[in-house]
Image (cartoon, rainbow, N blue to C red):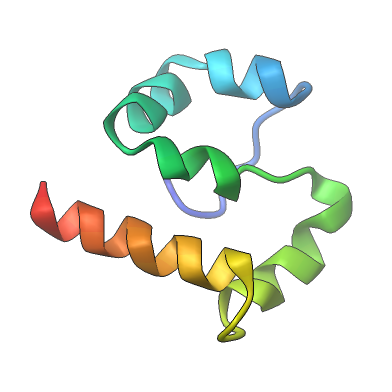
Length: 68
């Protein structure tokens, strides 16, 4: 799974994609970073904005990837 990858389908369909399912199994918090295209622009900004859930979750995911 890669950052910025666009998958087709609804949330459940995306979560069932083999690459996504493997990543979510390894780090469940990744599930919170899968967003619809309609909110992608705002969510992309929130990843860089301290105090937002997207920012905090992204930091936690980065920390987990360094552990693994």
